[in-house]
Image (tube, rainbow over all chains, first blue to last red; front, side):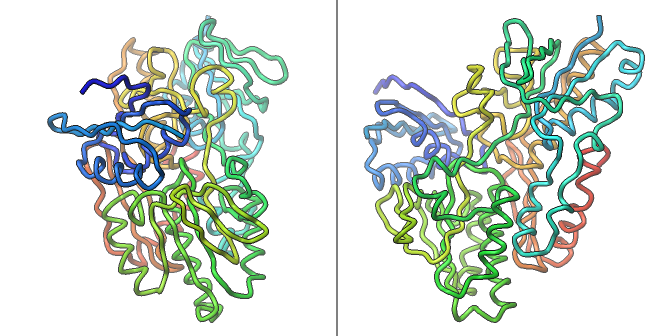
Length: 78
Length: 379
C-alpha cells in the first residue's frame, strides 16, 4: 500500500518522550487532512499508537514492519 | 574581519555554549580574530529545575536566579534585546531595538515556553510549576488546600519529562508531613498508555503508586478545562473532577523561530548528530529548540552545548569538525523529599533506573547548587 505522507517523524532510538508521544504531538499540531508517519525502533508503538488513534477517533492508515524498525501512519480526520 | 559567532538565547544551552566557546577560543577572542555576541530576552538566568523545590518551600526563589552577565565569560558581548528575525539568507539576526548582528556561525538556543492558553480554561482553572510565578502561586495554593482531589495533567509536548512524576511523589510527601493524607486524593494522568514515557520508569512507578494510594488514568490528553465546574475533559472522551488542578501546560518554541520561517511551533529541523539546522552548515541548534525526538531537558541542552562548542571551535581553528552528539540525556528523578533515582540514556542505550536512595537525592541537591558551574562551562 502506498500512502502520500505529509510529515514523517523519525523517532527511532527515541527513549523519551518516545514515539507514541511523538505521534500524539504531531496529530495535535497538524491540520485536518494531514497524514503523519512515525518511525520507531519499538514494535509496541504500532500497537500503542493504534490504540490511541482509536480512542480519539482519528484514522489509522497503516502499520508496517520495515525490517528492523516499524512505521505507523495516521490521518487527522477531525 | 573576525569570525562572528552569534548565540540567541541565554538559557542553559546558550550560556554553556557561549562559555565553552570563550574558553576554547580565548586566544582568538583577545586577539580580535573571533567575536562572540549573545542575544537574549532576559537579563536574569533562572535554574528552571528549581521551580519544583520552590513549590514545596525547599528553595527560596532568589536562590535559583542569577544575573546573566555574571555567568558569562568577560570576553562575550551580552545584548539583552530580544531577537525578532533570523535572516539565514543574509546571515543576519535582527533585534527588537533595530540592531543587526551579522554572523559566520549562529547558535539558536531559544528554548521553549509554556502555552497554557492553548488549552481552553487552563489559565483560569489550573496551576503549574514551569515558571516562577506559577510555582509561587501553586506554593500558596498548597498551603491553603483544605483537602480533596488534586489532579495532575500533562500537556504535549513538554520539557523535563520526569517532573510530573516528581511532583506527584513530592505532593505525597508534602501531605504526609502535614498529616493530611486521609483528606487528599492524588490523581495522576499521562498522555500515553503508561505512567511515564520511559517503560522502566513507568514499570517502577506502578507499585509505588499502589503503595501510596495514588490513582491514575493513562491515555489522558487535556482538551479543555471547565474552571467553574472544576472538570478536565480529555481528547479521549473522559472527564476528571478536581479540587486543585496541577498541570504541565503544553510547550512551544520561541516566536522568533516560527516568525523567521524556521519551524512550526518554534521547533527547528536539526541533524541528530551534527546539531546543524538541516541544510545549513553555519547554523546550529541547541536544547529545547531542536525538533529532535529526545527529552527537552537541561541535561540535553548541556550535552549538546559541548558538541556545538567543540564543532565551531574546531571549524575555526582546524577547518573541520567531527564531534557528534550521541543523544545523551541524564535526569535525576526525585521520588520523595529524601530519596531520588536517576536515568541516563542515548540514541542506542535505553535507560535503566537504579533503586532510589538518599545518596542520589543528595547528589541532586548538590547539583542544584553546582548548576552555576555548569552554566559557566566549568562542570
